Length: 302
Image (cartoon, rainbow, N blue to C red):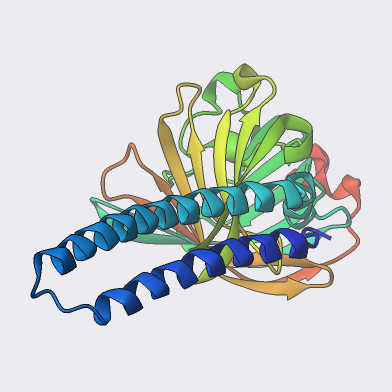
């Protein structure tokens, strides 16, 4: 359970508020029954108003402190590691995932689309096969931390050097590094719970991630908005080691699939690119039993 009972503290807080409110109501009642025609009555008014102002100020401070205490208590009652585990469960499908997709790139030159078939297994293996006319048969294979490109016209497989991982993936807002093999967030990051917030219509936990080893991660710091009911990241901000914002991710639609949730309309934005975005639309998504042999270099040429 992410939440635990806090009933006793709520009762104490309510009792404090009730006492203050009763005193304020008494002051207002007295003032309403006083006529301000004599000097003595005016002094009474000033006296009660000064007390009332002090009590009102005290009430405001009490409310602020109680709100802070409530937020602190909520943070203590949230198991942030459990939230991150739910995120990992949605990100990494152990058996295998297949589907069809459209990559829609928008920049200063306009909008262009690529279509593709997709298959993956766990965090280490994926194969993208492009199906649109001008990229037909091109493939991108990921095996753990290695990426291979296949161009049917050249009938050759190119091993992508790691120094090229930060280059744009097919002129999109993603880099090749973004599609490289992933560790789980639990393995790579410590997590801090920042509260709840409605983001793009989704009630979400806000979680801030800090990499255990910042030099080894593409985005050493991340802020995630995790939908409360699904554990799906519906929005993310990705930062550099100096905590400068690099990219954002927004999920506009998703589907349930067995015990996980998969984003079917996701928009990535590289904030360093002006007026640029990349939208991924997925269809025909299913969980299947996929063999690792399907991701061999020999299979890549077929």
